[in-house]
Image 1 (tube, one colour):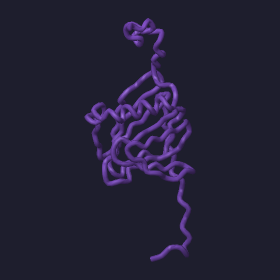
Image 2 (tube, one colour):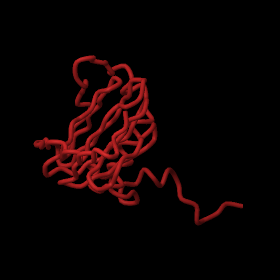
Image 3 (spheres, rainbow, N blue to C red):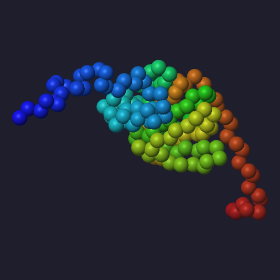
Image 4 (cartoon, rainbow, N blue to C red):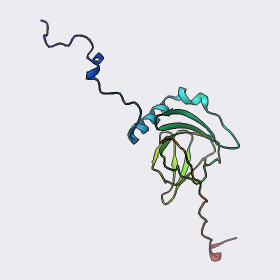
Length: 166
């Protein structure tokens, strides 16, 4: 017996039944999903990675309306210096190796592949490859990065003489 309520053809082919496709990410969750998707597509980024013993290597991987995606590599000992990202929001994820983030007032934490760090404008931090292996990270800035302010490291408190041992 035929069902008279059956839809003929592919209902997804009817444009008004589909939700509008977003032109580009516009929320933190969508940018995080973008970073996670790129991270999972190793064939997209792995062939591009280069390592530079003198300075961190970086490559702008993608741009879109109001955002950009950067791929960075870090050999052991390389760091970003203490900085913020001007008026940009952002996030980064580690693709390979491990990176240590030192954030003002928040201490340090080690990020490994799959870790995701989100930050707002004015967030001051330093990222360092403190491991013995190279690392690769993916950074998304929205709006695109136009200013990266560098800061001097705060001076360490002097150690009292009676605490020093020989």
